[in-house]
Amino acid sequence: MAFRFLALPAHRLVDFPKTLPDEERLEPDLPPVHEAVERALAGAEFRDLKARDRLRALLQGDRPPALGSPGKGFGASAIFAQPPQDLPALLRLADELEHLARREAGERALVWKCGQCSARYAVPVALVRQVSIRCERCGNPVQLSSQESLGEEALIDPFQGAVNSSRHQLAAFFREAMARGWPVLVAEGGTPAPRGRPSSPAA
Image 1 (cartoon, rainbow, N blue to C red):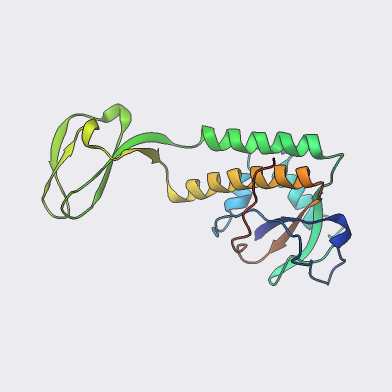
Image 2: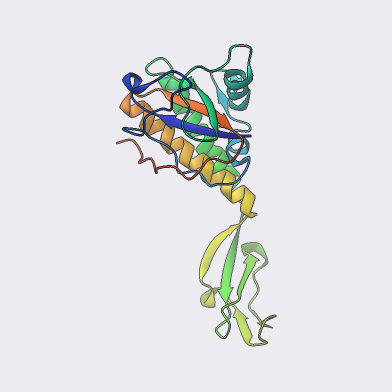
């Protein structure tokens, strides 16, 4: 199942089975990767509850959600956070998500590119030695020296990258929603949420 977050002014809320209006809607720009949002919230807390447990309680509990759907393929929405009473807790959650993303950003590596075929090579910073190798693709020599590198990047698997991207996007979205005084809603669907509108950080 996929979770979809959105925020809009309280006066724009409608009841299910209506669809929430697109006007004045705010959504995080999440990667279209199955389970990335749920994994992004793993280990984070909201009001002394695991954030994922709160999602499940809101959407799968005895009292079903009653607000409009965010769009095709998604069910009714529930209020995840309501300003002003949830503002401090949601800002703490945003900080926690960014902390988790930094902690799990992955080992740093230096990156090189073959001058002949553009094949890329990455070596963990701690293991970098000034050596020359033959490109596995074309056989051209590649100088693995720090002076020849393209710079540093994180050695991280693609799924973990999507999880950390989701954490940063959700953090920015939560802050922006609270800055606008809009309730944050969540809904559940059978397919990953489409990429939403980017949310700008709160001023």
